[in-house]
Amino acid sequence: MKGALGLIVVFVSFLSDATFGDTHSPSDCGKSNVSCMDFDFFCHALYPGATMDCLFELLSQMCLCNFNLAMAAMNATDWCAWGSVSGLYSNLSLCTENISDCLGIPWPSPLVEQTFVDIHHRFFKDCPMEELSDPPPPIIFALVITPILLIPVMVSLVVLKTKNGDGSS
Image 1 (cartoon, rainbow, N blue to C red):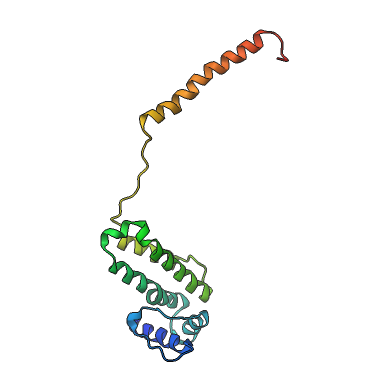
Image 2: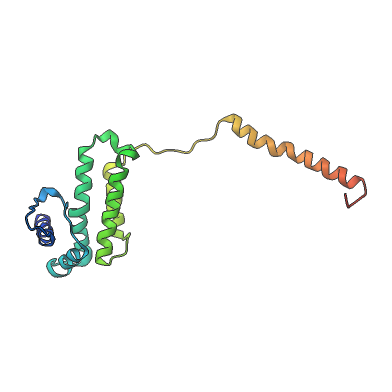
């Protein structure tokens, strides 16, 4: 079914191509100029299942395929470097948003959220998390001692002002 879907998407993108001369192979992985009308036509006229199932197939063929190929081309140690994957991640997010918008499905949907959870489980589960740590002891000392020293100073100023008996000064 996935192979047939890929061929149908390529066929629809071929029909929408103004030159009618470009040929696409399934390995192009959704690298075509497909419009919202093509997605809508595919899901409502050609796809036999529900719209959410069609969304899943389109996300798999158009978005995830590109992301998976790009991640496979990278060194696995670079997967945890945000600078290396931020562009790919943004493109994936934009792709899922565009297809969802074209089909009139709110974004993010549970399907899109599960897609991102699956991606994180597959590619980023071994990445070290940045844990919050305590500041160095001199900074903690300065933050604690400052109010402790200011309290007696403020109390003594209040006592001196009220000791004069003059409430106006």
